[in-house]
Image (cartoon, helix red, strand yellow):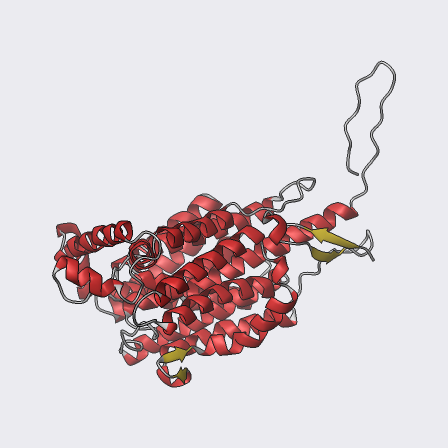
Length: 444
């Protein structure tokens, strides 16, 4: 057995992972569920407990979600053994971003250690999830666990007819916060459902459909317009990626019509109709959001290095706009005003490096499967940016952090497989004859 290095477009910070190539007759990487993949399934399932305060560990003023407690030993193991497998430039940008964000919280008169723990937990979730994905089956297991979690919460919410949790930032609060959990799961589930070469079993496919249907219904039964727009954006992106095929139209049509039937038959359309009318006519909250954004950007210009700190930003916004205490309701405004432009630049660079992710080994051509996985990663990044225009809580959303980590891990798995398969393929030596041009290399 030979061990082959795999390098990433992360520069010197990202050293090679090791890929066992085996003999020329077998598969380089067996696509099977690993222990880490099964653990990732369990971790994704425990996201459902984030809605209930009694299932969270109370450390003073900090509430630790159960999925973080379950993930902690795996995080420590990955940091000690496999951190160097993660693409280097995104990892370095994430580190700078978390450092600048933490320094800005400490710069205030009353430091907020909660914010430091939350941003660190978000980055650790993304990186650990990516490193735990060791096969494509592991990826599907993580997606299934996340879909079951958010789907269960949707069915629970519709059954009890109660809001999940409270409006606290450490709780999976109102309908606006629920969509932060649900939209990444809907995108990942939709990807597996419309994928042409889908290796998922019939049971897994039916489970994905069922647990995607619930969140869509709950989002449209509420008044969360950003959630509606997110669902529409997901449908358009999936159709754009897969093209107008019978399979994609059928899956999206079933989910759309099923949701419409459930809402009109068993739910209420009054909230939906009111919010549509309000959107078309315009309302005061839209104007307030614009004022908050412009004021936050001005605060960032006045404090470009560390901002005024995330915890002091609402007070500063209230003082400048002469209103009550108000959040920025925008991730860009939150970072620029609260932590400064340097922190914002590092966050954007992390997104750019993830957007441009590719294997560093140029001798191996990028496979169509890798391109497809990278497209999905880009779609998740775009969905994150879109949803962040309505709330800064997208920074701490377990759904987006797990979703981004799963897709980065999928890209890493496919790149390892492509490199191993390329090394197993014998190459015919180049041949040149007198008076004839040199013939190109041909793979058998």
